[in-house]
Image (tube, rainbow, N blue to C red; front, top):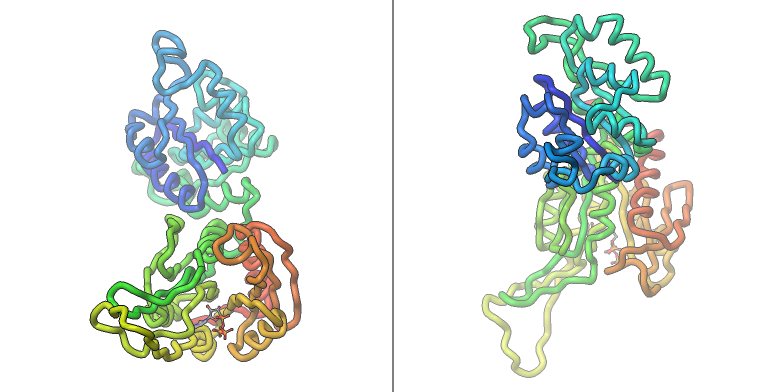
Length: 405
Ligand code: CTP
């Protein structure tokens, strides 16, 4: 998804840098467009470095569009207008609001506004008298009547030395409005999801270990989807070749015991725990101090690892706890047994004997079993499976309110 962040000239322009980061944390691609006045407050380089994209600063270069290194073509505003999923302006000045309201298109941002059909979100910031002026008020009402979302400014001490309404709204309110404009619900805001992902590795000797085929994709998809839906995410990950989403608070572990320690430490902070990790059930009873030499047949003595999920259930306060199970036979029956024996609120089971889904794949087909329901999710992407699992979290939360500490 792509959002243009328009930055206008005002003291609050520096706050747009944090907005870039918060949008990127939610997996959103950000293109920054700065007005001429904005560049008096913050250098375009700041936004270019943060967004990883050249910043659009003007409509045409001094010798015409071809000479402007910021713009690829003379009709860039049309190309950008057609490619975006939302236009956010933060901070928006009284001048910009007036131009939008009147349809004046004399720079890139104002032209983009007229040329796009994507939803528009405006977060104004200005002096209290400018905000309260009937001209601004009329412009705001006009924009609202045309479907523009206005994130009302907060009141408090303003940079001009006055006190009143006019301060750029809180980052959270701006991000929530953009996510709503993008059609991404914030139904997990206030939740802290503890998610485990990937395999574990149990050392045999200094060069060998026991592990499994888990890629971590399911857990990482859940982490990213939960962040987009407004949750805080604590991701405990075994060794995988994936990049965690920027906003996840990541703990990297190797063995089942390290995963257990990390999970138990974080669990009191969590309101939801989802264990997608394929935790090794066994570990070698002893780790050989030196590489085991090939010397005829050998036997590896194994001992069971602790069942982390079961331990969590015993320690739960009001957390929602969801397990995953990969089965190859008696799929539903085995999953139901685990739902009960581990005291889970739900278990997500997949039949890993099917080729092309589950381990090491971008796709999955699962059944979500709760205490009262069986929900089939036919083969689809892990992203969509993640969304369905999170829908269950939202549903379960209606039954299990968060305990007040
Ligand atoms: N699990 C865990 N700790 C373990 C093993 C598993 O927390 N030592 C969790 C997994 O993360 C998963 C759920 O328990 O969410 C079910 O894992 P699974 O391996 O299918 O179940 P087991 O209890 O190990 O049963 P079995 O392997 O015998 O089927």
